[in-house]
Length: 161
Image (cartoon, rainbow, N blue to C red):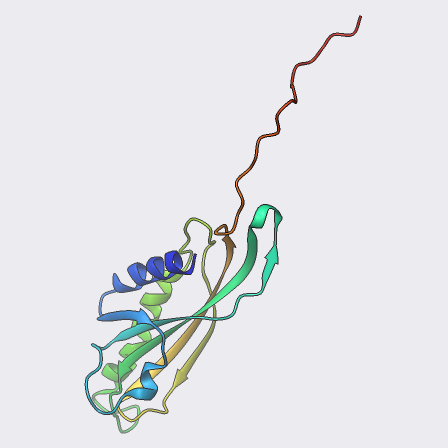
């Protein structure tokens, strides 16, 4: 199920103009050492923990939250009158475009995504990391048992005398 959801998110986000790289999140921004590890802007998909509610026949339901880590190059400016301010603020246009691609994204066994939280992280020297959190309802059928037919029963209706 997570594989299917990752692929749907990756396809939707990769189609956004300007997005150069999409991958699973593995805390990539903490391991940057000045070298170019991936093309920017990059989007990393992080799956949060899911609390499942068991259903019949091995199926389960839950609410899934994913965080999109949108990593862009920082554009240094000297105040709001700096000629580069529009270039620095372009990251918010990218976030809006990603949000438009994610809103209502749904597939087999997962409902439409809704944006719940946005946060900007400026703790890195040359990059800016924005984290956009989306939630959706999911159903996991990977452990569902096949339905077994019961023999010896009839659906015939007999007429009373």
